Image 1 (cartoon, rainbow, N blue to C red):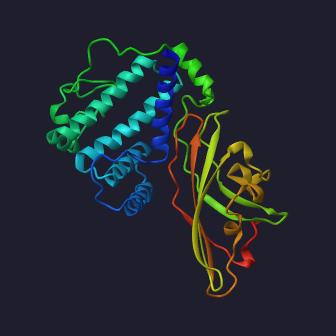
Image 2 (cartoon, rainbow, N blue to C red):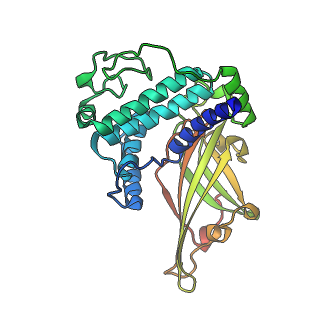
Image 3 (cartoon, rainbow, N blue to C red):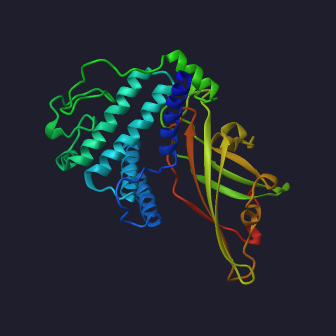
Length: 333
């Protein structure tokens, strides 16, 4: 039973990180905006915030808050959920990389969850939060008696450090064994890494030397420590319309390790080139489709995000649209 509880604790952390990664907050109230339209609006706002060069942490909180609104949550409650989701993910990474011990992790998670409940049940709490929270402890400044709380520290409802014992939890050694048994990969080289720089799509096309391969190049992330693995997640929205084939839209995602880069030219200092193989890609025919007749079109909407070995993400790039016809179907040399 004890081993089961430890495994469940670790899985809870992973689930929190995955929830953040896939940007899907839990609905709390009745949905008031069609989810598809709401997510589209959130993505548009995300692109705008990036163009305004807002800090990455602020962008993540704002984006999480917008997605909370997609679940029907409004005003200050959405803002607090956005900030709490951001904190849950940071706490999960700190826990899995052993920067904080299990009791500290549980105390901080319970602290954030309690403050979300406060905001939901007390409108003055959520409205006060909209006016300011200088130390980011999720306690509104207008009721915060200790306005300089250390980052991620648990507090009481007045914003002051909590007294009393930490909650019971498994030992570090027990969690470590459970983590290793579940084959969770947290790269030690990434422990103190910053958020990866933004990667963007550059070029796409069929490999002229191997027509069963499709190549995609993206800008290279260069701000990670030596040995810290970077993953490139590429999202593709494939659209086409033709006189005889009609119209169709489909979506696909692929993930590559930086080590899978096949570019050995001098350009590799600034870009990564990855290979998609026909045998392993179910939407191959849609991927390679080109426009033939004058009124046909075949578009590939490509966006990319980089994720480091400690789970930090650059966020999605703005989509880039590639129109493909028979005369430009190959990857540029």
